[in-house]
Every structure is written in C-alpha cells, then in structure tokens.
Image 1 (cartoon, rainbow, N blue to C red):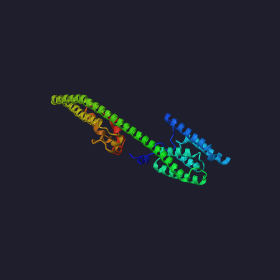
Image 2 (cartoon, rainbow, N blue to C red):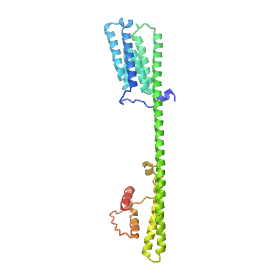
Image 3 (spheres, rainbow, N blue to C red):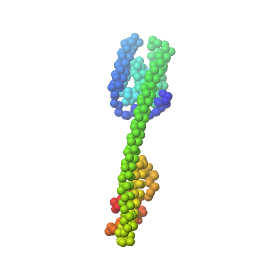
Amino acid sequence: MTIQAALERRDPLPAGDPIRRTPRDWVVDVLFFALAVCFTVLVHFDGVEQRLPPVPRAVDLAMGGLGCLGVWLRRRRPVDFAVIMGVFSVYSLAAAGVALIALFTVAVHRRFAVVAPIVAGHSLAAFLSLLIRPDLPMTHWSQAVLGVVCVTAMLAWGMFVRTRRQSRRERAGRAESEQELLVARARQLERDRIAREMHDVLAHRISLVSLHAGALELRLGALDGEVARAAGVIRDCAHQALEDLREVIGVLREDRSGADWATDPPDRPQPTLVDLPELVEESRRAGMRVLLKSQVADPGAVPAMVGRGAYRIVQ
C-alpha cells in the first residue's frame, strides 16, 4: 500500500467525532505545546522582533499565544486550526512554528485531497510574509528553502503516522473477521453434531413406531378393519414424521440467514390454511373427533407466514 493510497482512504477521525486522548496523545500534545511556547518566546526576544514597534510586536505575540492554545484543539478541528494558523503566519513569526504543527495534524487526520489545498495556502502565506516582513535577516531564497524543508518534513511525518494507523486498523479488522469466521465454523460444527444426534435418536424411535404399526396392520387386517385402519394411519403418520424430521435436520445443518430464507425458501412447500382440511381429516382417520370452524373466505389469500402460524397452532 502506498502512502498516497492510504491517505485517500476514509478519515481516521472524521470531523465532529468525540476525541478521547490516550496517554500517548497527552504526551504528544504536551510536547507540541511546549515546543510552540518555546518557539513563540524565542521569536519574541529575537533581535528582529525587538526592532518592531510595541503594538505590532504585541499583535505578533498574541497570534503566537493563540496558536499555542489552539494546539489543544487541533485534533477536534484540524482543518480549521490549519487555516487559522496559515492566516496568522502571514504576519506573525511567532505563529510560524504552530503552523507547522497544524500541517502535521491535517496530514494525520485528513485525506490528501484536503491536505493539498491547505499546503498551497500555507505556501501562499509564506510568500506574503516575505513581502510584508522584508526586515528578516535571511534572504528570500534561504527562507524559501528552509520553509520547504520544514513543511516537507512535517507532511512526511504526518503521512507516515496516518499510514501506520490505517495499517493497524486494517490488521485489527482482519483479525476480527477471522475471529467471526472461527465462531461461525464452531457454530456450524455444533449444529452438525446436534443434527446427527437428533437424527440418530428420533429417526430410530419413529422407525420402530412405523415398523410395529405396519406389523399390527397386517396381523389385524382380517380380524378388525377399524383397528387395521388405525394402524395404517399410525404408520403413515410415522412415515410423514420421519420425512419431516429429515427436512428439519437438513435445515439445521444449513447456515442460512433471514434474508436467504426470504429470497430462497425451502424447496418443500410449507403448510398453510389451505392444508387445514387435510390435517383435520388425518386426525379423524386416527380416531379423533375434530370439528373445524373456519371463517376465512379465501384461505389461499392469507399471507404465507400467517397461514403457517395458524396451521401450526391448530396442529
């Protein structure tokens, strides 16, 4: 991953997000604040500043002091902080050091598309500063070279920090995805184990019921037709229950979300209100006295989910 590609990704700290400083952040902020204060004080007592009238010198110092205080807010509003310090640096030498800190902050917290115009604005501010402050001891060329070196160093540092943070987040995201896959795999294995146990136990018992019902039907067929019919119903119901069990086991072994069920329902049609008469008839053949009173004019028009729920309740 290149540095520019990393910078074009989503901002690590979008504007407006609450900022919670870590101990490392506190150390960095205190260090930056101390450097900004030292730079402001050194510039204020420099020979060039001492030659200024009291009022311009006080304005310069005030701009530098405001920049030092702004260091504590740079994480929350990095773009605004960089723009303000760029404006201050046009006139104030004391704000020049804080302007470099502002460029570093923008490079860490914003994309390259946002950083580029801010750098251009600071370059314009430096050029205007040379026109406003011709009394500086350094030549224009030496000041330009020094400014380019300082700006490049701060931008490179900020871009490196941003890239490293994004790399850390990507690694954490991959680790989380791998953990989710492991959990899903464990759930699937447990689901398969439960499915095998259910199939082995219940299928065996239902098969025994079906086997004994078939034998009873054959032995009593000639003696008692009613008992034979009841045995036949038991056998049919056991066979149907076994088929339903196999279907449930198959569903249990699948890992399908709710959206999958909505777009791809099971192949076997699910019972609805239309199938209620058949359910009642099966119960009557088994010897139950069932009276069904349905006030639904068109069972087929009832939503499938409601129909299945009503069918299961009656069942």
